[in-house]
Length: 76
Image (cartoon, rainbow, N blue to C red; front, top):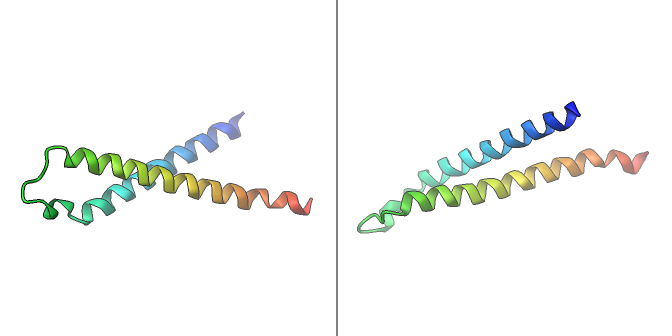
């Protein structure tokens, strides 16, 4: 039971890390330069886009390492 809690904690940390990384990356693009007037909802778009990209990347990352961890069962 403790192992499930540890895996959940690791999953949350990885997801928040990837979301933060995606947010910083999108901010580095300076999307506001593409507009004459910055739309009011542009910060919301950046946050939602970073959540979508970060969550998808974290899911891929965790799935990839779970698959590698499960390769042991081929040998057994």
